[in-house]
Structures are given as C-alpha cells and as structure tokens.
Image (cartoon, rainbow, N blue to C red):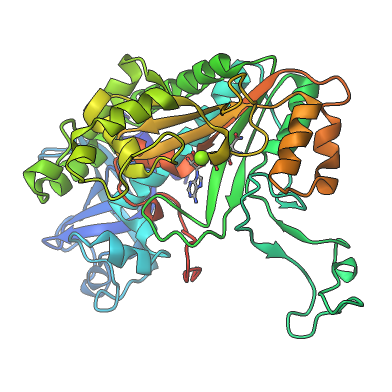
Length: 477
Ligand code: 4AD
Ligand code: MG
C-alpha cells in the first residue's frame, strides 16, 4: 500500500478511504490517541486506536519517539484541533524508542540543550520548522535568479586565493603536520603539497564569480564558505552558506536595487509558502519575548516584521551621513555604546548598525560609500579618494545581512590598491587580467544564508538555523 504524507492527507476530504502513514510518535494519550509526525508539516496526524484492538505488549511500545507504520481509514475527526484523523486498522512498530532513555520528552527543551543532541533535535517542532523554511528559502533563491536570467555558477570550495584579503582561513593540506617537508630555508615546502601550493577553504566565491559575470553577464554562486575567525557570537559560524550574485554592467545603485528585490522576494515567498511553520515560529518567538524585560522586547512580532520588510522601502544612507547620526545619538552622548563614535573613518560595530535600523530609522538600511581603509581591496574607488562604492544591507535584529560593492574595473587603480594593501599581487594575476582583457563595470554582493534564515524564522542564535553548526571548539556531529 502506498504511503501518504501527513501534509497531503490533512488536505484530503475524509471518506473512510484506506490510507497508510509512517512517522514518529509525538505523544500517546489514554492508550488511544497517537499524535504522529512525519516531518512533511508541523501538523501531526491523530491516529486513533480502538480500545482492546491492539495487544498490551504492542501498546506499551507506542512511546514518544517510536517510529510507526499505520494503516487505517481516513475519517472526519470529532475531536478538537484537527479536521481529519486515521482510525487504526493495522499498526507496526518500525523502531522502538526507550522512553526512559530518549532525551526528547513531550515538553519544552532549551535550544542550548538541543544543540548538544543535534542528531535528534531534527525531531522537534522548532528545528524541523526552521529547516523547512530553510529549504523553501534555498528553493526561492534559485527561482528568483532563474526568473531573471542569472546563471548558477559552482565556484570552487578549495582555492588558493583569499577573496576578502582578511586572513582567517582554514588550510587545506595533505602534508604530515608532525613531520612536514622543509625547503632550504627551513619553511614548510608547499611545492610538495597535494596542489603544489598553499590552499585553503574558500571564504567567498566572489573572485571566481567575477570571471563568469564578465562572460555570462549575470551569475550567482550559492555554496558553503568558511571563516576561521574566532568569533563566538550568535551571528557567526565557521561554516556558513552564502549567495553571491555578480553582474556585469551594474553600478552600485543597480546593485542596491537587486539586493532589495531579492530580500523582498524571499520574505514574500516565505509568507506565501511557509504559513504553518511561520505561525508556529511567530508564537514561539512571542513566548520567548514575554520572558524578556519590557525594554528589550521588539515592537513588532515576527510576522509583522516580515510584512514590514515586504511593504516598505529600505533606507539608503551614506556612511558619512550615518556617522553624523551616530555621533549625535543619545547612546553616543550618554556613552552607552561600547565603542563610542568619535570620528569619520571608524568601522561600525553591530551596536551602531542596530541603532540605525532599530531605533533611528526603524526599517532596513542600506549603507554605502564606506571609507576605503575599512573595506576590501576590490571595491571601486570613488572620486573623493577616500571612499569606495561599498554597500551593506542592515536588518532589524540581525545587523549586516548583505555585504557587497561595485568592483574596481580599472586595472591601474586595482593594482595600486593591491600594492598599497600588501596583498600578493602575483597570486591575483588572473583577477588582474580580467581588467586587461575586456574589462567592464560590474557589481555584486554576498547574502549570508543563515542570517536570512535567522530573520525569516525569528530565531536568535545562528547555531539553530543550520543543521550542524560549526563554531570554535565544536564539530561533534
Ligand atoms: O561581508 P562579507 O564578508 O562579504 C563577502 O564575503 C563578499 N565577498 C561578498 C560579495 O560581495 N560577493 O560577507 C557577506 C555576508 C555578510 O553580510 C553576512 O551576512 C555573511 O556573509 N557572513 C556570515 N554569516 C555567518 N557567519 C559568518 N562568520 C559570516 N561572515 C559573513
Ligand atoms: Mg561584510
């Protein structure tokens, strides 16, 4: 007999037809009512066991977490909370689950505890809802770009380049760490390494992406990226996924527009296609908010925040204007910021970004034209000789969700910047050549996938929106 997904059956008119479902027991009440979940939806299917229809030994094995295969009739439910239910005719235990030892009980567990059992937290309502939304967002990203004629380019995971020029990379080597071959100067001889050179896990697919934008016009990459920075925060992972579109013939303003369109499209897609999960997550976030002191609570609920982003323009603001606002802000004057904003040129901390978004403008902000000294070498230099055509999109509760720029397409300017910043000019030979052979104005950005999922699900720790988070001192699963 064919297995139906619970999601499908919940939308099927009940007429006593025979159906088969398989899934995991969430609860079992009164030796009669099984709440079964197969992950196809946040909703459970109620399966009703007629009294005395199943032997006692089997009944005892129907425990929270056990895996069952159930056949029965799909009928209208008289009980509250569901419109249909399955009247059990046959029940098979596929996998027992010792109730004494199973760590997930039918009660609320802390997210910290669930992180320690990442192999089982997938069975909780919260994590499974988050992962369904994550799937929907990945799908919608491909759909958005496909609709606009962008090509998906698979940029390499192992590279020899440091795209951000910022260090903090995971080395990739097959040399024996205890006894590496040495060169005549006593340094590790990477000529003998697998690739004959030093390599690392990519921090960004951008540089390789640019080579394809300057051929196919509009491309994007969407893949894992790696940063060995030791930041133990609720916004950073050592392994995260990034969406990086790169477009020939786009200036910084076209770039900002694409970033706005993409974010609004994705949030709208979630609202239209993930309503069950979002309603659950909305309620969850509200319960969490209620435990916080009044002044820390957000003014809008999750669903209100999502609608707000779809319906309102983002505030565009130059770095220079932002510094003026921050300098004169109350928390700066009252020395409430951890990092006080005193002069033009400082890098913005997340407390400053969040002030602009959450307190001052109360909407997403696109900051652009940053000082060149705090930004990457490849960003296009503005005529003022002080700033570059960089842009960051800042979101409420998240801070930076997107970072991007117009790229420096002028060979001499780029070379000069590489030299000023002491970057390995030789290794960037191919990147420089793009500016020698048919260069074009072009732009792009990187959207942090997990930061997007944080925003859309209302979760507050990035470790809870990726199945197996990687962060300092943690790679258990
Ligand atoms: O601002 P970033 O470092 O920009 C780049 O890597 C550019 N090469 C992108 C481009 O222009 N193609 O990173 C882009 C985004 C950030 O805005 C943030 O959302 C996310 O990636 N991000 C992280 N997410 C999770 N954990 C980390 N450690 C992250 N670092 C950056
Ligand atoms: Mg950035």
